[in-house]
Image (cartoon, rainbow over all chains, first blue to last red):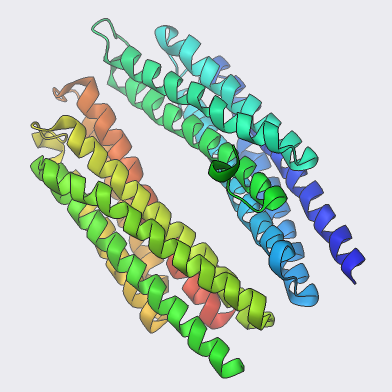
Length: 217
Length: 217
């Protein structure tokens, strides 16, 4: 019974890592669509989101089954509940990628991000993608050190957001109000993807150590 | 044992309704600070958020205790897990109120929302506050009809968001890029508060009927 439980729980974490890889693809493609104005890539992100939603439902069903049939306690219980929370956050990261793709699609055939804002926005996309990739590895490896490092690297995203605002509010901003609003919202979406990535990594720390990262790192 | 379980579960839902009332106050005060440029009210929202966080921790501890000591199955299990999700969303709604209050505080002694955008933004604040108040009632009453009605009324928030964008992008917008960015982000925060309100109400429907609202209403 306990062995079966741990096999099933292992499978839940394999599924979580798989969803995280799907989110990584969504973030990468959304940024590509945004920077190129390619409607077909934006559509791919939007239509693929249903697969992330389905994968979430599958993980939720498995977690409920574990809770219901195996009635775990203590650390095992906390691990199953953590998995339920992680899958909610991963789904939300997928939704945020869809928001980025929709702004890209809305401006086709133009490109939503005007020239002066492109380096910062492009870097935001890369940082977000890199953080999601590392979270997928962290879910698989349960590497506490890597999870704590991810939290520190989130600071680059915060700094990029400040840089982006400074660009929008500079005297020489000439791309207009619409582009500025797009960029402010895009920055918010990437920042939230990064926040969720850190939160998922923190839940891995909690599963492994029984402590929240602030108590560990 | 079962009676004790149901007493404890009832207390969890009383606590959830209490947190929802705290969020209602946070939303109301954040809007007030935003519309008046009153730094003291903004500070109240920001400093009171720790109470919402503490109340969330208390509900989480109670829910874990229920799962761990009482090992519920079927509908009872789903209800406890729903409570864990509801409390996460309520905490998030508190955080979003803090975001609104921080934009208000950032612009003091000026008012973040310029004259032409005030009616729409003020209405957004009222709709969000009203939705949160109704969710608190729905958690207490478990009124499925009221919960389904809330989902429909979320459409007003979506319409207000479109109106707000139209105002920002009108030819006669003269309040500048900074104010436009503030308003776009504020609109996003209120929209997310409304989304979470609908989601919490939907979870009540699920707890009562065992079905998601799309299958009920």
